[in-house]
Length: 423
Image (cartoon, rainbow, N blue to C red; front, side):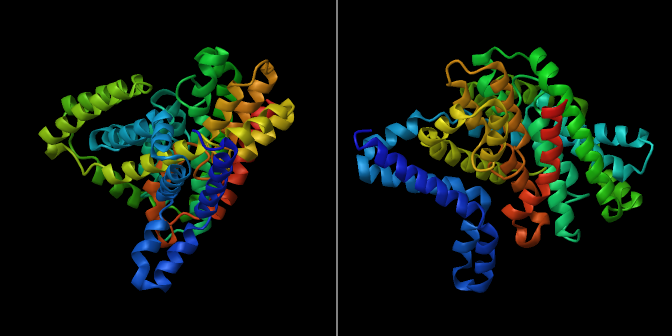
């Protein structure tokens, strides 16, 4: 970039702030679409939370081209690493395929039937606890997709009170954020530092994992107890289970599981997992009778959101890194917890990994704060847009409000923070 870097950085910071305000205003934009029906399409488009950061990233690149030339703008865009948005897109589509959902439904159903309480309650508890913890094996975006699709017909129904749905959504987002910390490769904020700080899965399990498991179980249990009177009766749950228990040939399931595992193994190699995804698309076309419609649109919107966050987030280092590097360990924990609400938690931990001589205690506090705060907003953790996209139909105006999510996540965030600080 040949134009004054300070000017471009200020422009990027202003656009980032506008994107944040846009994120918090999607409910109001949906209301405007009802008030001004002749322009409803535009307001509805801008009211989609998945559009926000991609839209403002395009605005920034256009302004950068005007200020510094098209070549500079293109060079900056090409310098960004879009592996994570691509991976989230691919893993969402694979994880939501009918054979994978069939396996997860059978697994959750088998566990629910041996639980010593109502099966519907058990399914909800398992969807808020066990599936998020599976994120440490299959990655957080895959866990978010499976948990959202498991919980949608039970909890995220239009007739349920909004307050109850926001509570469940907050618990889900927080539990997915901390549930990926049992290994060193599944949670984006951990992945950003694991290689630099030489954190392996044994270290993660010992320092973070068992605390995360306790926090996840507490959050899921409290939410299930509070929701118990509003959930469908056992007979309705049985009907929903039977509707998803179609016969599925074992070879079809095996191919899907193998492809999903291969994508997870190649998560940091876009050329490889895109090739596997193309193979998956060919297979689903060949055996279409065993498939349901793929969630291509939803996954593309989430990828667009995350790609926009990558573009805009790359220009925020100049003000974020001084804050992170200046804080003492305890202050760093709470600073990371708060800052992750307005920026991706992986970006925060990445900035921390660039600080020379950072102490082991500060490293722990930074990552702990970043993952504990990962459920406060849609942008706080990379898998959150996936959950929001899959569950928004159950909310008023099919829109998830930023304030409702923040309030719903406060309690679960406190539990996660207490687990990482006090245990």
